[in-house]
Amino acid sequence: MRAILWFPIAPVLLGGVLLLMTGSMPAIAEQSSLTGTDCWFKAPDDLTVDCYRLAVPETRDFDLAVGPGKMLSLPVAIIRAGKPYEERQADPVVYLAGGPGDGAWLDSERIDWWWDFVSSTDWARKRDLILFDQRGSGLVEPRIDCPEMEKVAIRLLTTTDETLAAKLQQDAATTCAKRLVAEGHNPGAYTSRDGAADLHDLYQALKIPAWNVYGLSYGTRLGLEYMRQYPKDIRSVILDSVLPPEAQFLEEDATTTDRAFRMVFDACAQQPKCHSAYGDLGARMTALVERFDKIPLILLRPNPEGGSKITILLTGDLLISRLFNLLYNRADIETVPQLIDIYDREDMDEIERDFDDFVADYLGRPDFGDAMFMAVHCQEEVPFNDMAKAIAAYRRYPLLAGLATGGEAGSFAATCAAWRDALPAQPLRAADNEPVVSDLPTLVLSGLYDPVTPPVYGRSAASHLVNGFYLEFDGIGHDALGNDYCANVIAEKFLDQPQSPPRDPCLGEMTPPEFQMPVR
Image (tube, rainbow, N blue to C red):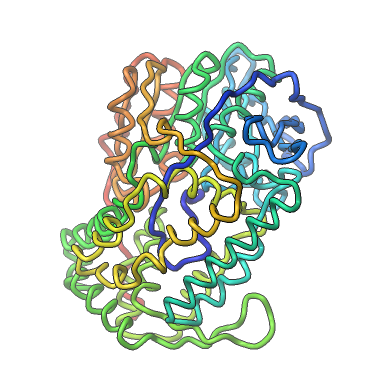
């Protein structure tokens, strides 16, 4: 479906830190309003969809206000329950998208995904499904963004000079942050805490007794903060591919990344056909990364921004990034051994075809909120991680050892430092690094192959949830509900009876990935 921690300004993401706002949070629901509007898309004839705009203040903490403050307009779409009347349930489900910075896919180009999902998913037809774009993402007006960062993305593919790459990223972050402040925005107000307040405003405006919260990826982080701040709004919670606040995301990135690749290597070794076709995948991948780090593979490819072709230097680190991106979805996981073989044999036709797909994903989409991505990570992740530990951790893994050579100057933390230095000071909030303790009924789902929010994160979150139910799914990476039929069966049972452990025979039918054979 969609990924969580998309990072357009570095080949490999190195982490996170928490830096949130303190001070009072005045009750300002009366400042918010929900206004009906014509939908900006055409819904299928068999679905009823109502569209709205929710007005919320950009700055909620008046101690940190920048200027008079702006109002934001968040798009909201409600897909009404489609089951026969006697099967409809009164408690809706609200969806929290990932990213941070990804919209809820409400634009006319991508909303078709939701039509397909609802038509094939029983729980989504029994209840109203509420979709909205979080502040800083999608179709929000005005939406903070960082085109400065998007401009350097292609340049980063054409150089192996780590000092230059670091400078490009830091300069872009500084320029964007200063511009946003000059335009009257408050980038410090784009946090999970602010997003939870927006969600509470939407809940109050809809005047419903209670709703169910479904968070995916970063949306789980937002969902957990919402559980912490506004538990009385909530009937039940589904957390899919969890990023809990207590996770040391940057410090653990090396372990998480190595584990994800080892899951694929080990699964291939256990399947006779795969092992016979590809041999020792781990050894091949490690040798391949070392080879490309010494002598990058040169690719002359069309410039996505138009004009003359560009020369891409495919290093081992960049290859790791490319293959890592494929570990989110089951269908892509099943191609990884085949692609390692293609790159190892330097089959240029197949490599160029594959890398063009990667570049398209790497650049992201125009509706992705780069500024929101920076705001959340630089305030809620990076300050709580020890970057020396994060960088040193890569040296423990032969496959990832090359990622430690750039040092902090080339890391995401340095880019975040440049971002924060360009903004008014934002104090740390200790709670942003503390687990959420709750007795709300919560279903926690993890994919066994998840490369970015591994099962250990889901287990950690669930261990603090008194009425939490934790399940893992074999053969699945990120986004269980977007990839697995059984996960949706379990979700339906949970929503119907959130106090009871959800069970179904389909849990015994999960299978590991079925890897594709060599191209030739």
